[in-house]
Length: 339
Image 1 (cartoon, rainbow, N blue to C red):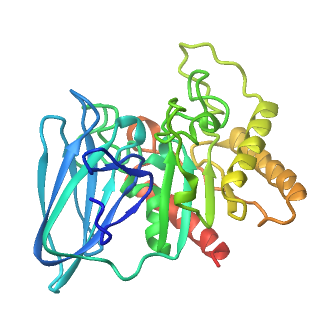
Image 2 (tube, rainbow, N blue to C red):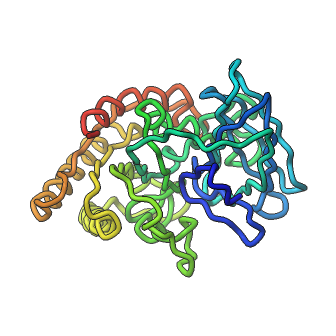
């Protein structure tokens, strides 16, 4: 899987068997092939009793979402959807890093070709379960059935939709339930605690190599879980705006250590309404003003406000259609700052 004809994106790695591990949401592989079809061999690395999902895109069209089981290697045939000599295939991990890795073991085709053109502009989307695409795909498994991640589809995340529309290469650094200083129901490792770790978890012995990929834009969509009232079971302290601002400022400065010249944008949450929505927008503007005042040699941080929505996906998350609404709102804003 170290074929130079194969292009990878998102957080990926080769293991000792030369299998390509897809780690984070929407991480994946792009390649072209000659012939009517190709064969892709997958292996689930999540451990016994677990599974994950990938999405296949053929000739720029959605092909299928595939459940990758832990039982054995899976052989998937992909056919070209257009009448042409060369076909394009994208493999996208639909589940997130906490659900475990999925390996692409090998790709077989009459001939694998290097794609001539890739997006010139790169964007990283940092966020929570909304950015992961949790609960947005109920076509095969309805809400409340199966595992909690069975409705995950990062392909239909607002982030992935916006990137495809604007021809950007995306990286989704997102973790369900996470915030800038606390999780949705308990105190836990927040995004600043896991962001630099390879698998966005608590294992700090394996760090992501930020020199591998440098985004032109970093989009941060956090705050939903910080503002959450919790689950009613665990003790929940009132939201602390001082801690929120302090953690957010520190996190942005950490991002600058890896990407000194990136354009950072701060997004509100469509899941918050009324007083909470107004408070988050006010805090993000405060954070942007403070950073911009002290970093005049960097691109000015900009803020964006989603319109509030009543989400109808699983567990009060946006549905596929609602992610499209979010993307439609965000796309003109991103387009205005892309150089």
